[in-house]
Image (cartoon, rainbow, N blue to C red):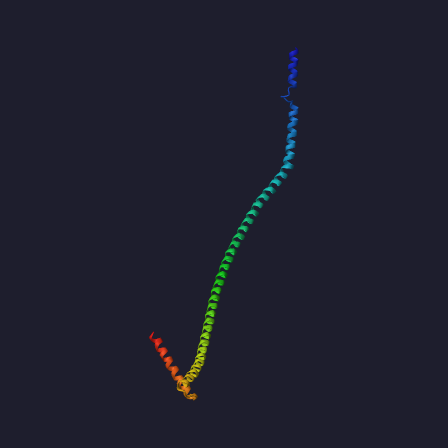
Amino acid sequence: MYPEVILAAEEQMNPLLPAWPEVIIGLLCFFIVFGLLGKKLLPSIENVLAERRDAIEGGMKRAEAAQEEAQALLEQYRGELAEARHEAARITEHAREQGAALIAEMREEGQRQRESIVAAGHAQIEADKKQATAALRQDVGSLASQLASRIVGESLEDHARQSGVIDRFLTELEAKAAASAGAK
């Protein structure tokens, strides 16, 4: 009898087989808690998830809108940059043209000044030549008349005759010099 009592006691104390009243009370408590959670907590969780979903989708839409706006600004800046480069090229070309025109104008001015200086120099040389020729004629004339006076032994003081003889002599000398220069 002793082993039968142990067997009956074991069936009552078996931890793997719960008592039915405990199972029913546990299930009843589970459904009550599940119902309360479903009625109170589940709508709050649904609302939070919906808000989060809206925030994420709204954030994505705002990000797409911002990206489109940034792309539009980038295109605008690129257009402005291309326009600025074109403007800079136009200004540079205009400056080159003005520089070339200024250089040409300065060359023309320099050419005019050079021609003016050369003409003034030629005029000065011609004036100096005439002055030297006149002075030389006078000196040669006075020397020739002094020499002729010594050779002839008479004074050739007649100024008009002396001047005519000297002029004729010098003119003949110039004609001979011109003829010999033309022959060369």
